[in-house]
Length: 103
Image (cartoon, helix red, strand yellow):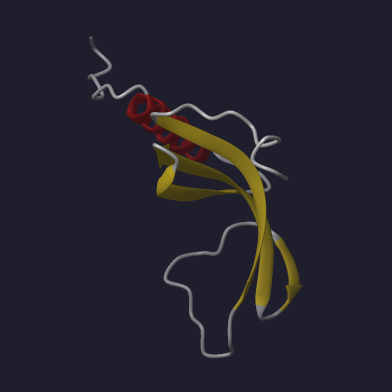
């Protein structure tokens, strides 16, 4: 893709939200501190699962990236976490500080 064909991006802050599939392998001595997210296990030493990547850009430079796993059967808490992360990213993009929900 040439520079002429590249999509137009805002000059200031902007947020990219996209779905991404990851495959993670670990060795025999790996012990998870918490349960692994639901996903498709390729074998006993790996897991594959989908997630949402939220990337923040400021004047064309990547300044942050968060990956939020999506379970096969997400809970209400999973949904609330995703909503909060999206809210924070969009407030950052708008260059506005978060306000308490009561306002």
